[in-house]
Amino acid sequence: MKYQDFCNDIIDKVGGKKNIKAVVHCMTRLRFTLVDREKADTEALKEMDGVIDVVSNKVAYQIIIGTHVKDVYKELIDILGITSEETVVKEKRNPIKSILDVVSESMNPILEPIICAGLLAAFLSIISLTGIISPESPTYQILDALRGAVFYYLPIFMAMSCAKRLGASPYLAVALAATLLSETINGVVGLSIFGIQLPEITYSNSFIPILIAVWFMGIVTKWVKKIVPEVLSYFLNPVLIMLITLPMTLLVFGPLGFYIGEGIIGFFTFLMDAIGPWFVMMLYSALQPFIILLGAGNFIMPVVATLLADKGFDPAFISSCTISDIAVGGAMLGYFLRARDVKQKSLFGTVTLSAILGVTEPAIYGVFVKFRRPFIAVLIGGGLGGLFAGVTGVKAYSMAWGLFGLPSYIGAEGDFKNLAFMIAAVVISFVVSAIASFMLYKPEETTEKKVETKSNDVVRTIPIASVAQGELVQLTDIKDQAFSTGALGKGVGIIASTDDIYSPFDGEVVMVFDTKHAIGLRDENGVEVLIHIGIDTVELDGQGFDVFVSAGDKIKKGQKLAKVEFNHIKEAGYDPTVIVVVTNTNDFLDVIPSLPGNKAVSELTMNVVL
Image (cartoon, rainbow, N blue to C red; front, side, top):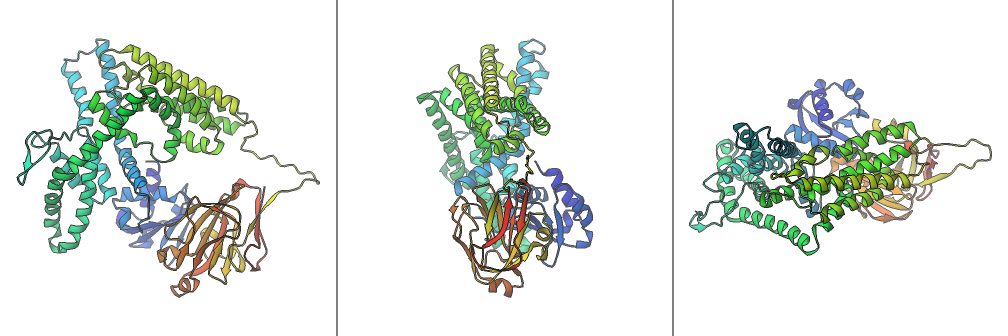
């Protein structure tokens, strides 16, 4: 977990888990409801790396993190053992993306034992081929039992991992998974319940049946909690939940998940048979960095686990992951060799090593997103490496990737040719990506900005127009410490005289917060602006706000973005000041606000200096 230590420090400094009644998040901050605020060490929190500021007011105890607060929040509630449904308003989300998110997030915690099993398989393959330990020896069989157990009991790992996210008890979810894996049910022929014949289903080595079953368990849990009196809930809830969920799983969700899993395998098998493994491997090796950016990097892992269980090998995906990771490392090496800026050279060198070892997120988020051209290098190098692996029929015999996973390509029967082809594919992806990125690198892409100071220089500015009709006020006069100190960027405040909010420039909508009180915009020059309507208005849960745009929409200067009932905000006891800040202020020479006074829509409120 990326923010695990950070979240644990926050929990400790606010007085521990028992001092936290609830926690929600706004656009930039965590909002705690504490049992006793005196137990929170505010000064120590302010000193933490990653904490911008701490604000304690009548609304909540607020720890200001920044625009990545949503990611921090996800890990925080996971550590606290609560679900987001208990603390925040549900977001309206694309159902397909929601499914991808649940699968991807559920796979994250269980990758550790899966990687362990994969590398152990590679180790056992080497020691058996070299004759160090015989496959018939007790030592080998004990170690192999660990490897086999991880995949056999995959439903139990998945149940524990996804239960909290789906609103079910992790312990009841594990009990359900263990029941499905029992000798009475798992793979049994002629099984029936309530006189209804059940199909033969093997639940071991699978993940989809238990995922659907736990989702249903979450729904049943909410329903049972509503109908059972609280005085009886401790005794009745667990048994009612299991008595409803188990039969429905055996009758409906188990078979449904089994056939979905078979369908997924059938689809990829058809694709590889109809076109060829080379196509799948070339495509995935080239596009994996984009898949990681979409947050679906782990979605393929359950598919791989099913392939390994069904075929004994993975004909495409794990190999493609490794080839792509090595290609990312090659792209970063090309940038490392070409860079002259000391700080950038250090960054490129560090992420090169981590990518080669199978951890590409630092390179993708830290370099690729900013410079973009490395994506092209991986498309070329990763694509060619994947094409070679597909044409030569490379197979992965275990779930292990990166350099340390290469021995697993030997296979159980000493398939050294498979290993040789995989090494060749990796070398192709690394070398080609390095050469491509070296050639694509732009020397002027440095972290330092060179500014000429000659008297005849013309300073370029980007105007930011008013987003509302009303009185312009200085940011320092805003009654919110996070904004007034400039911690979230330079900007202005507007005391609106009408209910309409407008776009200050041509650009696009980056984000609309689910409670509609905040809108993120980006102009054509990369200026990122946050329009925050009112102070602490997240508590209104969208009441009084009507937003007309969505994330990804293109916008024009003066276009109406939202209508706000400012009188409702005032009557509810909140400050209605509209705050407009440039959140990436540090990317520019300066942000200069206009003088206070009345402003009409589209009139200048500040200049961003390039």
